[in-house]
Image (cartoon, rainbow, N blue to C red; front, side, top):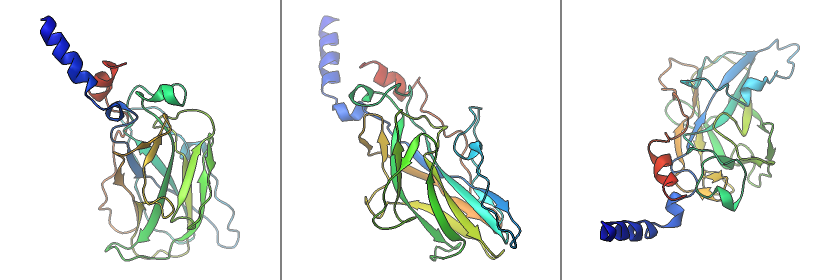
Length: 236
């Protein structure tokens, strides 16, 4: 028995530390909501608190489809889901073996239903949500968007920001897709240990108009504590 414990202990020490750090496979999603307006008045869109934060209810269904309507604002938050549990209560070196995120750099492309780059709806702005600070963009937005936490480690209900588009015609289908930031060359989540999560993956973008063919994500919440979180807990 003692020999077996020694072998298991040595095996644990051979696991590289980066394997147990941050989030294993945080997943990026776009969401969409919309507001029509009178073209003679064209007021700025009203951004409610639900744009920047989910209410913690289960299961969580993301909204990734909206009809394409003339004289309509489209509000597109970016969602960082499937973060590891438990979420770190602070930031910095002590967060190495915990989940959560501090920020994200990414880009957005607008295409039609066959992937050809489009110019409408018109991009208006990239905006940081409360608790995040928008960063500079050398390549220009939305090709390079970035924001980072002003203080705390964030969980999946917190959106770091949202993009705003203006649509003037009820034309054909459009798709918004997450791509690598033109500044950074990637779309990796910054975890609460202040390192990149190399396992970051893209879940889905959004579809505006046409017959819905996009499949929206459901319950993009944390990795269960009984799986990866429990394994990491053995080494804390």
